[in-house]
Length: 412
Ligand SMILES: Cc1cc2nc3c(=O)[nH]c(=O)nc-3n(C[C@H](O)[C@H](O)[C@H](O)COP(=O)(O)OP(=O)(O)OC[C@H]3O[C@@H](n4cnc5c(N)ncnc54)[C@H](O)[C@@H]3O)c2cc1C
Image 1: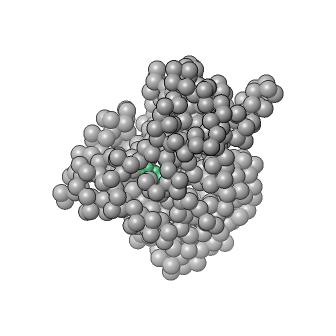
Image 2: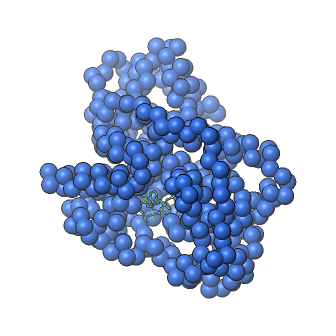
Image 3: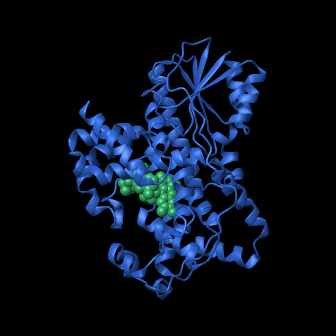
């Protein structure tokens, strides 16, 4: 499958090595939206699924560029971990969002639902916004600025519920990330930083993305500077910080026959705390019925999940020298359980999933395994643990701690 974003580890490394020399020029170039998007890395799907990991990006960057020259790049790379760490402490933001999508589809008027459908199908009548919606559906990728403008258009101009706009992104973006997507939409809506909404402005699009306005400016007066006012989105009640669960960051000696469950929150087991595992088998599931029915993912997005999962499994099989299995049972929990039984496993090891779809299945998997005496061991990367411990408030306090940490890494 050809994609604007690399998906396999091989392609991700090729793209990363090509982009690395320009990491210092990134700060000045990144805001411009240009055909082909060569001024940004387009690595987000790779980083989201971890066919490429932040740790190696940071290490390579600091070997090739001084910290100060590449700081903006490093900062952006670390945003994902900041959002992930934040969501670990507020998992109800994810579950409420999923619940709200289902509720809104049942309770909104037919007129509002039809308008939401028209806007996401590129039929809003504002030509530059329609171009962005069509680009997302066609490619599965959008530049950050285009994501911000379109999300703001949806919420503050069309006055549609942010939850449904975020769902449209989640169904089509190849890099769809429960934390980055949900929390960025909340930020545009003014929920993430209370009182601060992001408002789309025509002059900003003219400056950074003139290409979107070249051919057709229909409807752009709706985005004129000063014409867009913030819709006040009411926060949901009861948003309390929890202490995120603590996971071990290293493997204990095996207690029996082990298997590795590889899932798309981290597809790089050959690097990090799981590298020394001796699994009898490795399994990953590809579950189209869940992707389609529960999440309504686009065909392009489903195909990208197949590609990254198969790539991870084949690397794992060659790293561990064992067989790898693609599970495609309609029920992923039963599929995993059947695999564990077939291979007589007494312990299944996996990276601890982050808050999101895979994490949502954990308690069911844990119960199914426990009933059969199979242990489920979840391991977190030490570098995630460190980053998450810094994500206790806003991004800038996070970055103060993170940049100090990176500078120390640099010196060691
Ligand atoms: C409304 C909205 C929804 C978004 N949804 C997602 C999403 O589902 N998945 C996703 O990965 N990103 C999301 N982002 C963040 C950001 O737009 C993308 O990560 C970025 O555009 C990906 O393109 P790139 O790899 O070329 O980025 P580059 O500019 O090359 O950035 C390099 C890397 O830094 C990280 N990064 C950069 N900007 C951000 C950011 N604002 N937040 C988090 N990480 C960042 C990504 O890992 C990215 O690959 C969203 C932003 C907005 C405003």
